[in-house]
Length: 379
Ligand code: DOR
Ligand code: ZN
Ligand code: ZN
Image (cartoon, rainbow, N blue to C red; front, side):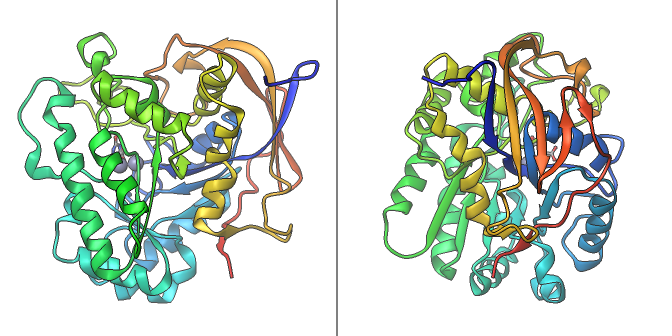
């Protein structure tokens, strides 16, 4: 049983290692101000930002620009992934600016992927992979049929092969099928190489049933929400604490892009993840320890440290209150004011957030409008 005392529970700040803050280039979808307020509202004190910016963050000058933008406007601490660059050595002079590489489906199948894996292996950095084999996509009205489970299973096998070849660390992000889960778990117990993976709240809690209803466009995301059996497998892996992390894949788009004929994939997740997890915890389906996967474990996984406070996370604290609310996109801090969880009743709220000991949010009020810092690689 989880004891809230009178009403409050003190937790470490959450760490979300897969978010899209959209700067530079797509500020109309999100920016560091709105995105980091969304993080704070969700009890998140540190994020790792994805490189699919415009232009892409696959070189030092864009990574430098990202550092400047986030330093000026983020409330939460942050780190970056570098995007796919076949001339990966170009990134040598800004090695301290990224904590790993991110490869999208097309990157994984391009010849330069091998260069990225071998460079990453040299420095012990993770290659974070969005695993879906584009050659297995097909025409279908139903989003989950257009990008079937086999596409993920196939791409995970391919990524495991690349990582074994170069002895690099593969991190499969937003893993969403039982077949891919089996391959990853098998690789985890196979000597040599290293593989880790994360799961999202949406792949654990929602199924492709949503693509048959009114939230169809809102629920479009890649990898897609899966048939019920796949969802249940991923959720069960979480019940058994098998993933190395939970991530939101916070991927905001403008509402017009979501309700169009061809909806942009992704939706905001930062403001709901922790409290969705509390719904599972307080209803007895998950143990409180699952929150480790959204805080200490991902922080240690990426080996980042912050400031001067020992390991760097001791001053990062969230106070959660036992207070029911209903998810309403219109109330979000994110510029993306919709959610596939719209209307869900959640049992807890973020009451206060402290970062490196400084108050950032208390009782519905933001105490500052900046202060986030780059989390640097450990050692
Ligand atoms: O749903 C998704 N949204 N999947 C991706 O791989 C990209 C992301 C985005 O940037 O919107
Ligand atoms: Zn992705
Ligand atoms: Zn993503």
